[in-house]
Length: 371
Ligand SMILES: Cc1ncc(COP(=O)(O)O)c(C=O)c1O
Image 1 (cartoon, helix red, strand yellow):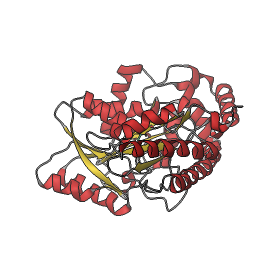
Image 2 (image 1 turned 90 degrees about the vertical axis):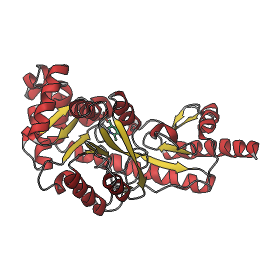
Image 3 (image 1 turned 30 degrees about the vertical axis):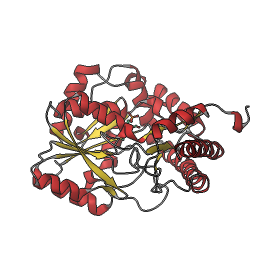
Image 4 (image 1 turned 60 degrees about the vertical axis):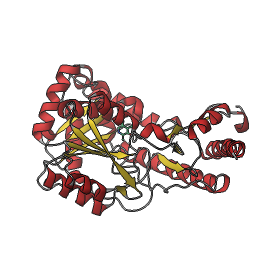
């Protein structure tokens, strides 16, 4: 094995777990059981709703009827269906600033009028949203990543969850609660989903995923919402792919029902906490100029460098030193030039320290050259 100091491809760019925290043996056993016990459900076309037992498991988890669930090929597919169903050119859609880059791309492609509301350490700036609404903005949808946000790592407070629901009710828009990281809390208290706080049951469409708790290659995610919205999305799904991968969903159903998912979540959480700690201490020691909010879970940490830092150049200089990350401006319509996203999910603590040391030395060199 190459010495750590010689490694040329340390990725702080990809929001994915490393293979050592994927429950490969439990997945193999789940596949074996699924293929033996109910081969018909795994190997035939299913319906667009998804694998019946998996849909039932998801419905029970969220305390809703199975008719309110659609299981898809990854939650990205669920997001795409929801946007395709709801968003027409010119429709106003609220997003967090910064937000998941693929959400921005998808909304732009559909011609949405994107209303970006700043993010604070405790989630979207709801009073800035309230002001925009008072001033006449009429969104159809607000996309919010409530837990361990991608890319910023922060979590929406309970007060803000309630306030958002109030605003959605008053101004008649839907909240799209995009929540793939919810199970990955390793500090602090779990907060209720907006889906569960929505008493009328019509203001929230909720998405989550098994990419972060089982593995991304399995490609299983889902949506929960009103029967009306989910029914329309099931129709769209039928037209798109007849049914999602039943092989994948049969394996996930077995993985969930057997309790293997709880063990997997525990393994991932433990590793993420270690990786987050390694990232924070390496940043504090190697790059004390960096500012960041310490995430209580999830995969990501957002780093603000001193104003004037040119992160586009830093990205190139870091790649030359064998380290990649995603620059902040990719997650924003404007700004973010002196920020970056660090994904610590796929890198061991030892490599994290090495990567941060290299980025810090590149930053110092660029800052020195600019001075
Ligand atoms: C906020 C958010 N939504 C959706 C996704 C897509 O996840 P999936 O692998 O389930 O398609 C991601 C993946 O990184 C994400 O961060």
